[in-house]
Image (cartoon, rainbow, N blue to C red; front, side, top):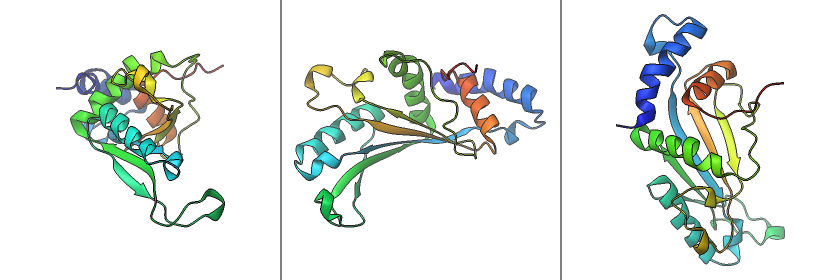
Length: 181
C-alpha cells in the first residue's frame, strides 16, 4: 500500500477535521487524480522528440501517455490540424499516491535553486498546478541519455471546495510551499 495513503488516514484526516471542523471523514477533501502533461512542439520538425518524450513520461508515470493532437492549423508555427503536439497522463489511486510520494521526496528536492512551490497557483476550487522545467529531476530518467530537456505541467485535482482547503490538504501531505511573509 502506498505510504501517502497511510499518511492521509493518520495525519491528514485529523488535521483537516481539526482546522475546518468537519464532522464526517467522508466530507473531507481528498486528491482525486494527478494529471501530467507535456507540450512537445519540437516534434513538428522531428518525430524523435515525441518518441523520447513518450519514453520519459512512461518511465516517470508508470503508464503510457495519451498523445494529444492539434485542433487547428497555424501557419506561423508550421502546424497542421491533427499533428501530434502533446502528451498527457492521468494517475489515480495507488499510482497517484506513489507518484506524489516520489515527487515530494525525490524530484522536488533535486530542482536547482528551489525555494518552495508558489502557494498562489490554485485555481479557485482547490486544484493546484505546478510546472517543472526539465524531466531530469526524476530518478527514473538517466541524465546522460537526455537529448533535449523537456518541461512538464502537473495538476493535482482535489475535491476541496476552496483554495484554503486545497492548500491545507497538500501541505499536510508534505508539499514544500514557499513560506508566507
